[in-house]
Length: 236
Image 1 (tube, rainbow, N blue to C red):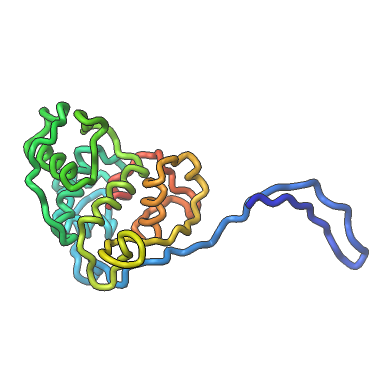
Image 2 (cartoon, rainbow, N blue to C red):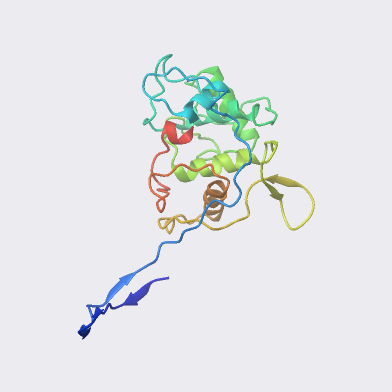
């Protein structure tokens, strides 16, 4: 809520004249509401990833589970953006450790991925079959495009629908107050002040969902930067 206010000084001599009018919006102080109880990668059990350009424990975690192999044997390239073909590989490699099942990866009708490797084409087919992506259009996937932070929130939230909750993980009813459950948070609280440009309701829900589950990495507490490219370290 935007507030308009003036300030007075008070001491033993009395009260000063009012300051000029100022306006400000107080920053909320929400904390994630549905954090996991346990860590999939406790530091005491996960070896270093062995990359020369990052010592991030998150990168070590996804290396441990085979979700990343690095850009070379000794580099991870943490500040590079995640492309859509890389995202397809990351997410399909995460399905197994997350307790899901992989579909066949059969051709889904995308006409712009023929130049990619068989592994990438299969991964793209699989995330389409899993409902994680619908493509840029019905016939194009745009494999070389960068993934925005808004898009990554969507992809991860859709992946969680195909995943099995671990001990201490948070689930909610898919709809209503009974029936099947899935991994998600229903809490809508967050501290981000830059989501006004996110018009897709599914995106807003995905961003707040992942933040409340403790997944999101941000540079500052109040900025999500939805249109910025997702970096490889932030993905991890």
